[in-house]
Image (cartoon, rainbow, N blue to C red):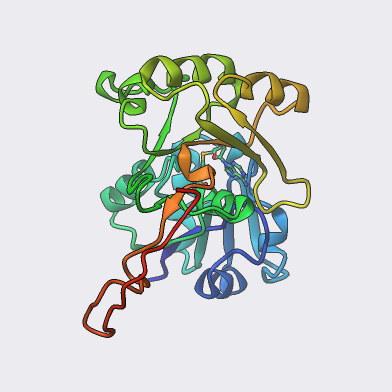
Length: 260
Ligand code: SAH
C-alpha cells in the first residue's frame, strides 16, 4: 500500500526543505499543500502529471478523503505544511483520521519559521547567563489558550519567547508581556516572512515595538521574538570555555563573556 507523507515545507525559501522532503515531492502522485503559506516553488519539482490540491479552501473531511482515495488507488500522497507540521499545523487531527481509516503515513520534519527567524536575526535563543529556555506560544484567537498559559504567566519567566499567530494584536501583546514581568526595555524583534525575498525585520523594545510594527504595515505572517537573547550581553558557553575541562579538553584559566 502507498502512504501519505506529511512534509514540513519550511518557512518559505524553497531550498529550506530536507533532502528527503524534496525527493518525496518529486515522486508524489498527489500533493495537498497549505496554500496560505507554502511557497509554490517548493513543489515546482513535482511530476508533470501530479494532482495538486490547495487545502486552504478545504475542510478536514475533504482533505482526508483526497488522501484516502489516492492511497487506496495506489497513489503516493504528499501533504505539505509550512515550517514544521508539529507547530500550529492542525496536524494531529489529520493523523488521527488516517489512523482511524487504517491509512499508513509518515512524517518528515521541516524548518520551522521560529528557527528561520533566529537565522534572519543572527541570534541564538539559548545564551548562558541570559536564558536557557525558549517558549513557543500564541495569543488566543479563534483558538483558545489554556488559562495557565496566558501570556502574562509565561512572561513571568523572562525566557526567550517566540509568539506565533499574534502580530495582528501587537499592542495588546506588548502590554501583556510587560504586565507579566518583562521590563519595558526588553528587546523585541518582529520577523515578517522569514527567508522569503520580501522578509522584513522590525526591532525595538516592549515600549515601542507596536508603533514600529504598525508603521511598517505588518499585519500577518510574522513572528514576535522577545527577550535579552536579542541583546549583546551574555556569557560564553562552557563547551568551548578555556577555563572548563571536559572529556575532550583540559581547561586553562581565562573566563569569557560579552558585554558583561
Ligand atoms: N508550522 C508553521 C507555523 C504555522 S502557524 C511553522 O513551523 O513555522 C502560522 C504562523 O507561523 C504565522 O501566523 C506566523 O506567525 C508564523 N510564520 C509562518 N511562516 C513564517 C515566516 N516565514 N516568517 C515569519 N513567521 C512565519
